[in-house]
Image (tube, rainbow, N blue to C red):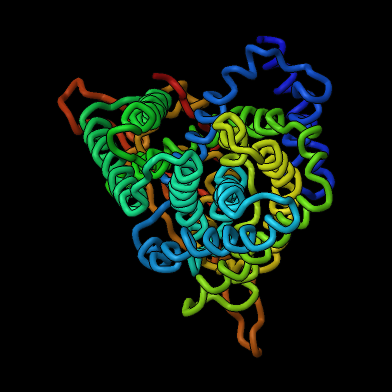
Amino acid sequence: MAISVAFIILFGLLGDYLFRRMKLPGLVGMLLVGILIGPYVLNLISPGMMTVSGDFRKIALIVILLRAGFELRRDTLNQVGRAALTMSAVPAIFEIAGIVLVAPRLLGITYLEAAILGSILGAVSPAVVVPLMIDFMDRGRGAKKGIPTLILGASSVDDVFVIVLFTIFLGMYGGGEVNIWMKIAEIPVSIVLGIIVGLIPGYFLYRLYMKYDWRPPKRTIVVMGVAIFLTWLESSLKDIVPIASLLGVMAIGFVILEKSEAVAHIISQKLKKLWVFAELLLFVLVGAQVNIHVAWKAGLAGTLVIAVGLLFRSVGTYISLMGTDLNRKEKLFCVVAYIPKATVQAAIGAVPLAAGVASGEVILALAVLSILITAPIGAIGIMILGNRILDRGEQSSYRFKELRESLALPRVGERVRSKQFDTIWKVIEEQETWIQVPEKRIKEKGKETAQLIPAILLRYWKEDTSNGLGTGKTISFRYSQTDPYFDRYWEILYDW
């Protein structure tokens, strides 16, 4: 299994690098690498690795959903709430309806089998969509109208909705008694419970971090452990009560961000570093699940069914956004962002075949084919349209994030070492501000105006409790594009 991890890392990084050089999303390269080195082509990944790949993919998805939670702000969620709710159900309903209309004629399957197929294909992939949305949020794209947050929230609930429909249709096929209304009622119940089981531990973690001065790595590992436990709780209680644990994972980050933005950003930065490896595992292993031989059997008819489903889905997405303040181009971006499929299709595509559905092989073939078609096209479309369409305000708060990352600045609570005097200090205060740059003047209508650039003021405390708490020396420094000297005099200590 160890050599399989090595292949995933080396070939995954190569695929990521090559596609980024071509100005394409690196995740597409990782997906293709996974297909090539997977068991259905070159077979370089050991059977043991494929056996545990589901757990690895879940952990990687948890990392990126935690990062999403640490980016969700209350005011932005309030702004996009209604649209997110409609987008979580309407596009999937439209896509299922479109597939039910054409699949029986093109594939020779029954209407109920077409509904099962539609419920598998109707789920958008958080694995593809969430990382791209977080990248836009990191760069301040679409921040004014909260478009990345809208898609983040809607795509997470979309999966819950579609999987419940899949359970209903599959139960109807088996001939057993299925209480449809009870199953539909599971949707809001699972959403509410998922959020609650995330908010409660999130609040206790915040209190824990306020009481005990843990270092950032330990805080991050504890958050990861709690998030993984929530997904285990969902699977353990699925026969008793439905819980949308992935929403709970995001809720953990949300409540910590609400209570302490400094702590939230520290953990988010550590998760960002962890995501470098988790991203490789997620996309390479998702690609390794794709059986291109099965996909080939779907043929032209299967491709046409997927295309019709996407067309209906696009109409449903556009209708969901009616009445919002999004312009036509921004709505187009949302339509494209709702195209990628991968996670759910890889997870449940083979379930109908195992359950004895007559057209199970056809359903599996289309599930695999949908990943091959929509994941690369959707990811490329999201990146291209997002960079061209999504707004970016001149004084966006995300410019502070860019400044912080470019200068590698610490957060409140982190410890730093003075390179000049070899002493240890702790960051106790930070302030974000806009400063004028006199030497960079812009003439506007004959009048000179100074350019505003972001700056971060940090206050350091030299830890000294010999004379009691609250004693010791403090100093302050301001960092900006014109004062980029943090790493010349300081280094961040990543101790426990």
